[in-house]
Length: 304
Length: 225
Image 1 (cartoon, one colour):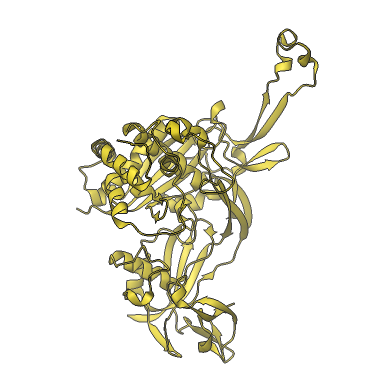
Image 2 (cartoon, helix red, strand yellow):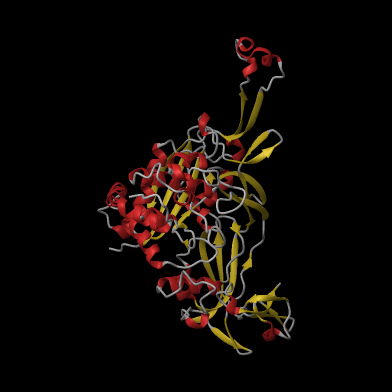
């Protein structure tokens, strides 16, 4: 049985609330993120979830927060350590070098960062996680989704034009001067000009489906476990993507299926076992990870 | 068996940046699989004369004293649309504030320096295929190419996903030059002195051999156009 292989995790994610993953504004209205697609001999613009956002929200953020909690690092990190763990770090030193023992130690103690890669202060460490963009399941994307998903047949009723899934929202931001009893509370200020603000934008309607996938390239079972564990944490926290989560937007409920797992891990280890293996590994290596973090990003503050 | 091939990569997502040279792609993939020294971590500071090159399954020709692989530069399919996207990154100070040690909770400059927020423009092209003319062993080439998931820049966030590879046998070898009305038209980036009487190129300075970005390969070159 091989211990290194390629694994592809497919997602079919249903929007449980309006999705507002935006690309900019037009006048006062926020515009949903779109990309150009060639369909029916024409170029059309179709809503899409960026791979960058999915990678961060699905894997890096939940995975990093779990490690921070397990290692008891809240309130102890330096800016460089937090920058590396939560956003991938920055190359900040002018002279770069390859500190192979440091990379080897990282790969041993943290499958998550072996998967994600990142930038230490003076060297870039490659990762092995390839995240696709989130494609709206619509008529324009049907052909590509079927090819990407290994001929998965989309459910009936989703193959409508993309515009069918785009709607608009509008909210009003309250104004203290228009509150009940405003004159009593605010006095003369309440008489001034109102600041009541209406804001609006496009959104993807609840019930729309997105197809996306992640490919784990040349990975071991522990890395697959770390990815599945992060995905589980993301889903347990409503699978948030995009903006306005504070007012209930951006909830995704994902169904996943995995290619290549049984081919090279054997049938005795399913996703749950792989996640448990990763959790056990983290718990057994908390001190080792903290030692590595102190070595890679030295600080006067002791982590151990 | 060594033959002439047109190798086509069918893409399922837009291409970010430029398409790669196929000899670079094969050298990288083979050196990674063989676990060769500097496979992943070759830097400008390492001289190419110090490292062993992987034996990729492409024919080689010696032209004007230069050994070159028989493979053309990448040829893009029709560009259906072109636009600029952005990649953004910022240090999430609101999420991190309480995670930091009290000694490290200080004002952070995010408009420049190590924690600068990024909003980097990216050149994106909507194309359905990239092809290369090569002379080589199809079976061995396919063994190396078939596991490559995507091409181009920012593959980790979904650009340049490959849907499949296609091989079409060619009668003529168009990998280095193609004959047009009795004249040689350049198909591959080459040292300038090797293409004196050829056509269809512009003069430049850069890498003529893989790894094309390494200063050791820089010289006066002719780029097909």
